[in-house]
Length: 444
Image (tube, rainbow, N blue to C red; front, side):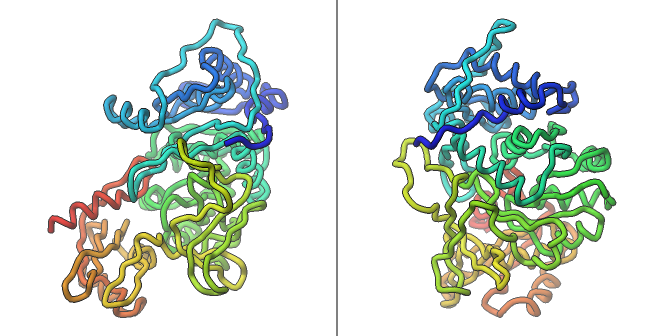
């Protein structure tokens, strides 16, 4: 799984901007030179070719490990820090890694600079629809992802990224890559809490990445405005159009983005300022990213992605040849923007009609009182599968929700049953835990 030689972005940043503040956290500030030194200390204790799993806490030490382990010729395997010891050990073993926090080297010791195209990171997929898999990301993937994002979004070296997304997911890691590539600053938050996040967005932050649940909690807590924020990328799960509208009317430049671990992050993103014209879409592909649909023009089909940011494959599996066939179904609108309809493996066939649950979920999540929604099929003698919706939102009323759907969806796409709970369970990356919701529903 090699690719052409690619740079160590942090090492390059440390040469170009050694005294520029790269990271601000509750425990202090670090320049690019400081982070580079910390990465060298870690690299000095890493064996070439080793896979080193570590608890990816929201800390400067974890950030230094993300850079330092690959620098030594090892592979960094960031793990969810919320896992208990046994669960972390099982996950590490499944990814072929050994858990260990590389100890600091003696002061002044410097590891060799290695800029290879070999695997730099193994990132476990979220496992929302099955067992997690280890996605290989190379230095070339990382460089390409950061470069394409800069061109597409127009980011600058004077920008400040707020980092509240987990470091064991590509959404959080991508902010590290963009910062090192551009020379921009990161403001690190150890956890997502609406009030501190809102305050940071008023204190010099220009970019932020959030999942829809985070955005909704932020808007429920405070309504802005945040005039200094150039863009808030909202992804990781489908996002209701109404949520984007609400955010922008509140003064937060929120835009949908679409990507995945296997693509190195962003595939398509709506540019800030285009959110009204791009309603219902996730925008156009980033430069160098080729998105294709396995269907006749204008028809929905499985989305495939190709480009230098796309992973070569999964650990202990043959390298992929050709484009990455995702599990998502979509189509292009007349302006070349991508519309994501949902996952191919989640299509519900009810009464002989196909229903994309994500389409129903987006409409439900745009209704008053609804925070999150999960739609799926359960076995049914009459319908084959009956469509069921579980809605998070204590003030939502099932009858009123069903009535609102009558004007928005064909009859076969209206859930036969709608249940309302105070809050749906979430994974560590902010996505709804669909497996847990389905499991609970099977016991009804």
